[in-house]
Image 1 (cartoon, rainbow, N blue to C red):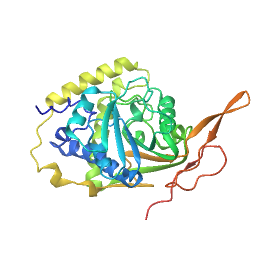
Image 2 (cartoon, helix red, strand yellow):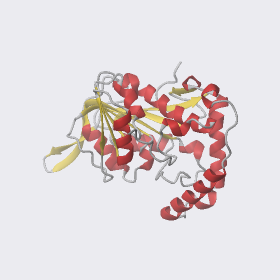
Image 3 (cartoon, rainbow, N blue to C red):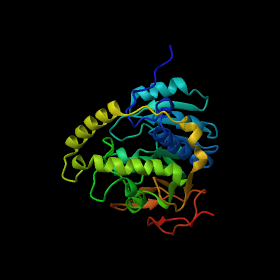
Image 4 (tube, rainbow, N blue to C red):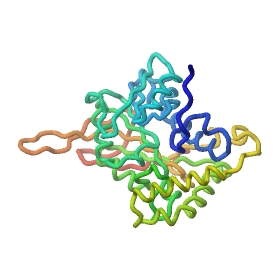
Length: 311
């Protein structure tokens, strides 16, 4: 018997859940465009898709990668993914929420982790584990919403599942603690398409402002946002316009070195820092840079580089 798609929580991207309205379909495109951006970096390599969700992205990567392991903390989505996406070089696995990955050191050439870092309470452990399982000269690819366009400066996330949202500088800083040659990219696109998402941001950040003020305890924030979402979902109107797939496509979105308005931030980085025992002290050393990355500095200090604008 065919397994039903996981519950539509607003965070798990299952294609069936994101076809009804232009706004939902645009979010789906954000995700598929991100995985296509990763394609050249994973060709003929062993890949870990950390936070794979329903598995559609891991399946996309498996078309060019040597092998792909998709992992997630939710057992229902992993079961769904394993049933729906079956390829000889693709497998799915549940991981615990404690932050440790069940893989040996230097197990993968590439780690992709898209729309995950904003959910992580202990970002240092998250990045350290990615660094640990990457092989020398490996690459990490990340994607996360751009706080700068979603929230007021003082505001907590209005997505109840998000712990921390990042702007360019903060994201670069936390990644540079564990990796070098950090490159940042922006996801932007045609104004008529990106404008749909920007309008949603303006609407939601005002609607949720009372419960997203900085003094609001996290448990209270999440509870109130859950109630608010339930009310909004019950009252939302049916879309009577043309099919969203006829209104927009992946070609309307771009991932560039510098682009505005930027709805998502993406990272490509390499040269994982490793702990090295020197006498009685433990210090941070470096593994050599990945062949796909260039620029960055020398020695053992982490460097941050924003690439030159494309085109």
